[in-house]
Length: 305
Image 1 (spheres, rainbow, N blue to C red):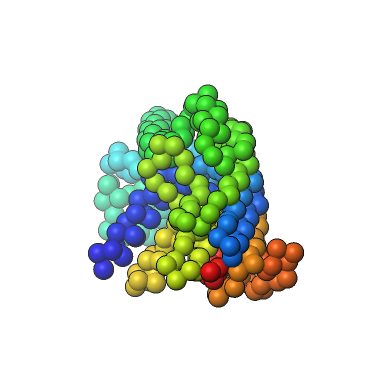
Image 2: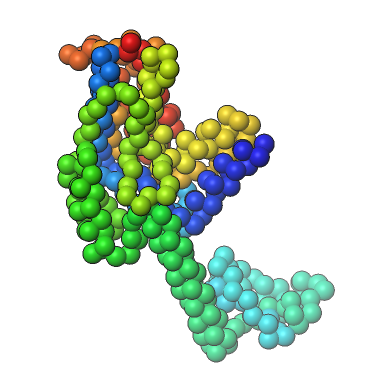
């Protein structure tokens, strides 16, 4: 149970304070040859998104409305974002008519003065500004764990240029607002596990694609972070281990749309694609259509030699 709790805490803490490394519009391809060669290609967007960019957590601060101001006969004031002119009028009328029993001055609502409203508005807007600044600072710190400067465009252009010094990154262009356009292609031998993407100075990994070699000559291909930036995968694993609440409120990236395609001339032992293997000039092809609502983590097992 400790491991399950650890997964849940990691997911929750990242969702509340951090950013997410997610695909935007993309095309991703993996080719596995039974002779032991493989190619991984990803072309499209990689996005660093903050919690407010995700469905389910997109809560924009409410602009001040004078109806938020609630005042009492004792001089006590309260800000209520759910209050309305109608609720105030009903409460004041009820107090004046004596239809609400047992009210003292500290609970009897009265009309707010313009001075009280001005003071409450000033405090409300200051609190919202402080909360936004704290959230931005926390998000920037988390973004830096990925080697990404959350607020500096100049640094991110340099980061994009630095990526192209590494094998496989054919082109990386920073477009602003956390968006990178990427053309990645890597080919090699299946003598080791492969993970994409890995960034320089990156302390955390949410793999878009993993190719893992087994001792029995089979290869697993998975794409955990193509779904919900990796947190859906994390939640799914936790749920499988017994945490039935782990998948609640997991974020969905509203900008993730693409196709994940695997081709192979090896023997497909298992897969969870919707339509299963189809004939292809390269042997067999499997296709996963990924969109913001996708919750099936692409997985397959291939016998190569």
